[in-house]
View 1 (cartoon, rainbow, N blue to C red):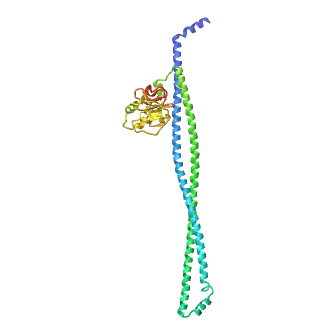
View 2 (view 1 turned 90 degrees about the vertical axis):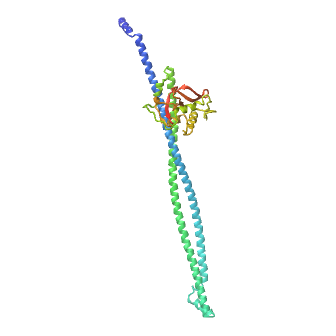
View 3 (view 1 turned 180 degrees about the vertical axis):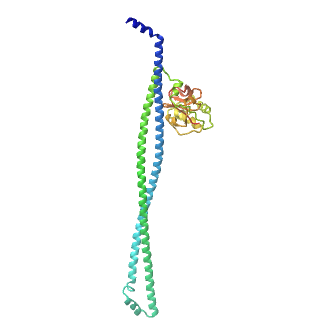
Length: 365
């Protein structure tokens, strides 16, 4: 037994122990780096999906505004149709009253001339002083009758016209109400879709918070284990594949860096966008690129993860935007970044690009 123990002890030399420890440290480092990369990838993916959802919500909001505008216009049209129908009904009542009165007046005038037959004609003849007077009286009676008959016909035609107009207006009102009902159904559907997508955005916010927390924990674990991420290690957090898009403008990255560097030493201000009096990290990047004609509005640091074109780590150039978890900066082309770093440090250029895990690298100029 002693002989066996001696052989085993003799076979485990210090050199072998050191080799085993080295392998173990490398394995731990790889696992930690992989976890950080996974967390960063999750943040990027979630950010992109969140941005896509927000774009969809924006599109739905615009469609909803259009529908609401159409509904308002239809409500106005329906209100006007109701007023027109009410006017037509009033006109119809008045025209009917006028026609009835006209008919009654005509009956009174014609009562003794035509409704009693030939006796009235004989009476007119006997009462007339001459044949000429008789003829004049008969002609006058006929003229009065024709006038009344014409007036009555006109009123009756007017009644028919108003009735037709009213029927037409009521049909138009029904058609407008049908359109209004369809638009109201579309509005209800859009409201439901927007509500669902906003709930999904809120869920993405929760996922982002968890992914960032995981990335922070893994980074802290790396530092505690003495495995500070190297430039190569950090490059695994962004897409590879040699992505190196061509510039889309004549502005060189060096010009961007030179312009940004003018403001080094100026203060940091949370939520600010003033390069002289104070800005935060995203406000700094926003104003620098706005100076060169790139302006997509005030974005958060996460928002910059989807602008422009994707760049792989090994092809990073001066002027590219570098996105971290909760932070964004401009690559200076020499391994460092120009950034609005913090309230304490202000705008600086004293940190390496791989000072923390990189989520995305984007080229916009």
